[in-house]
Length: 219
Image (cartoon, rainbow, N blue to C red; front, side, top):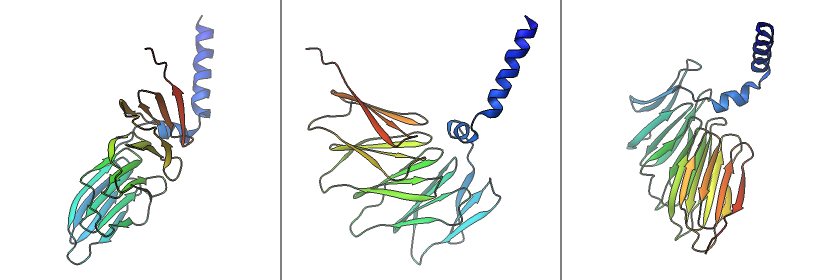
């Protein structure tokens, strides 16, 4: 019995050694590795992973509305710009507010992704690349729900659902049918589920793809 137990433990150890390091890292919650602070008219990101500091000078008369950090990403919003920073990046990524665009009232962060919602756009920041992706909102398109996991996020409007992943660049869209409303939206580490009266929709972060299954409607 002891011999078989030793063999089993040995096999488990070998499996752990051979497991892909990248996937394990993506599935494992991480501590906050960035600190974002305002220092002498500069936005300063202190990187615990590299030991460095990333500074961005504020413009004359520019006011910081809020800052957030979680895991590998940091966000700052001013009355002129939206800024994102990630560990091992050399600079702050910047998106300027457009004419008549209202700044986001809040930010939603996972360990490796972040979401900002303005009056005109949905912006997702990805810590792996240190870049923003964006999706424009129509003149009367209203965001009705959003959810953020460690590596994925989804924005739901009255017309569509938009998914963004730390593994894939850009927003991935799936249209919603007329009057197809969101019943529930749940974010996990690497996928997000959206349930409507007609369908169960799953956004997969590893592929950037939407999967759908029709619900059985019982009269």
